[in-house]
Image 1 (cartoon, rainbow, N blue to C red):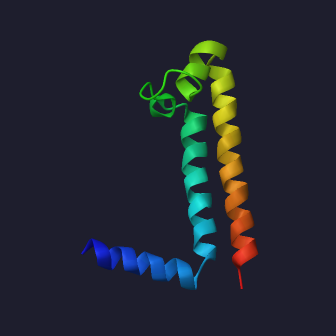
Image 2: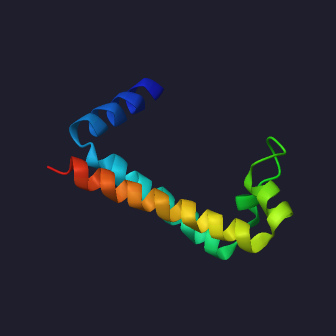
Length: 89
């Protein structure tokens, strides 16, 4: 079953590579929404203790961490739009 799903998506993205850009735009949109709302899962405390969003929030404050999350989200959206336009037939 997993092989069928994997093969389906592999074929889909090979035939329509612009869908990868649409996926990045959707991920960026969700991240942007969660960043603006400042959901707690955006500042997860798991993982390494240095140079993650929780560390940035604890060191520089919530406003800096929120600003960086919004910048990363917009970057995902712009890269997705670039991929879509580059691979659109």
